[in-house]
Image (cartoon, rainbow, N blue to C red; front, top):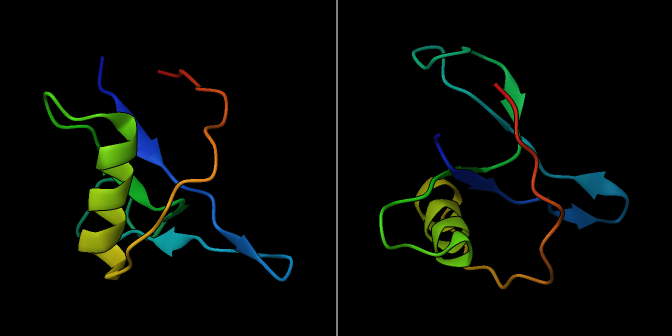
Length: 71
C-alpha cells in the first residue's frame, strides 16, 4: 500500500489545487498538493516537506481530515 498525504488550503472561499506536469502519471490532471510519505516520516512532516518542496511555502497544520483509501 502506498501512503500519501495532501493538504486542503482554503482562503476567501477559494481552494488551492495544483496541476500535474505533462510528464507525470495522470498528466495535466488537478490535485491537492502533497506527496508520498517517506519511511519513518509522519503524515504531518510529509505534508510540510512536500508543500515546501513543491510550492516554497512553510505551513502549519490546523487539523487532520478523515483518511481515504482507494485502488
